[in-house]
Image (tube, rainbow, N blue to C red; front, side, top):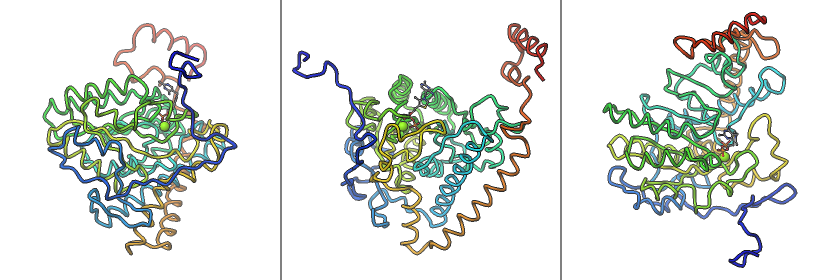
Length: 414
Ligand SMILES: Cc1ncc(C[n+]2csc(CCOP(=O)(O)OP(=O)(O)O)c2C)c(N)n1
Ligand SMILES: [Mg+2]
């Protein structure tokens, strides 16, 4: 017993369900009409108190849409979003097969989280900066990256634009203003705030968007970023993707606050919580945050509430730490089906059209895959020259690296 009469000296939260138990999430009682739309320019942090603990939704469980946050998108915009989400899911499946057959070393899927980066990037302008994690590759489809180039990166072959220096899925796409994914999780959050400060200083209409996971938001980087965003009010959109898990560690261990969103209020940054499997709600809050940023009103902090439906990575086995039915019982459903059902309900889409689209994307991915492996795969090579360990980092290679480079050549480096 400790002094407070607790049996344990320290509270150690745990996951709601463990393997062998039945996962059971109660149905959300958040409805699309619950939270009023707010004026993006005049809203202050304290005006967002309800929005930081409630849940902004647009798509109802029956496939209709309603509420003040409906972004009123044209049908072609919603269909584009659906197409990109389906593209990402099929792409992920193909990459996992490549990993399992030894053609690339490691992979991370975005299963269940496809709407996040796709809807949010679509709500931005093309001059805006993207500071992603490994769970937002979908932004590159929106920004027009060639799929062959993405696969070559994942393989690390001679056409990899980062020449094998990064792990797979750690994309860099300069033309799309999509900044290198960092392996140390969380670093992008404060970098994004810095770039947003630079945009403001240069008086450019550029907004920066970034994402951090629930787990990584327990790191200092998250708080440094929030603090700078609070003080300097740069044009930045700070998203915490709460997908319930950080590998095998449950989100309950990452924060003791009521919601992940309401932590932003302590920094006096307007904070919203959004259904991360609702394409329309995500689009809407991001467009809102961009409008605020562009009007010189500073940062917005957003909790994207979602569920990591797949394993953390190709090296992970979630059956060791959560029940196998947990993904299916997530109250937010599946982002692709939710948008698809809505479009069908509204008469803009059909099951046949959907099937035809899946088939055509499957062909597109297969074609890209065959093209990419012509430049080498993990099993057979060819690989980038070992010299690339030393090139393109310093404009002039320092003496100690020159020594190592010479040693490598003497020992048979190519
Ligand atoms: C600084 C740092 N610590 C630990 C790791 C190992 N690691 C990689 S991903 C990950 C979990 C991150 O979880 P979360 O932030 O919730 O993101 P998610 O994978 O759920 O998208 C960990 C611990 C790392 N890459 N960097
Ligand atoms: Mg997580």
